[in-house]
Image (cartoon, rainbow, N blue to C red; front, side):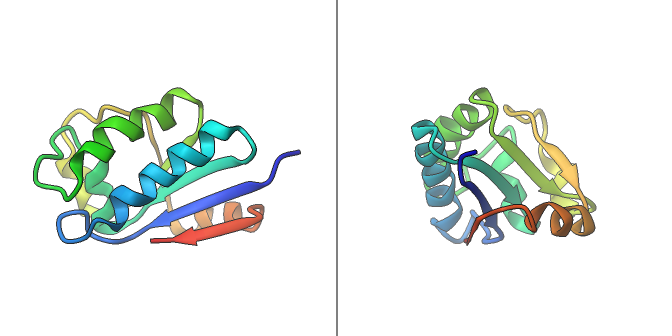
Length: 116
């Protein structure tokens, strides 16, 4: 069984390049197929899943790499109850909404966790 990696993204992509870089890293590591990669977007980071990402820092990383993650079968998760979920429009990627308890339950099974 390959190692598992949870990438937890909380930074606001309107103010920081960190979420875009995290998505790029997730797509790159996932492409190696040496680790199972899961991305969890929390709070303002959920904006990266939106139909319109023009106002986000390094928006080309979202439009280029998020679809690659979804197409490769990597899990993309979003925080349940976050107000940002209401403003996404038609998200270009499939994602699953989970609450904090479910995240905690799943996080126990990951070998590595990166937080952005």
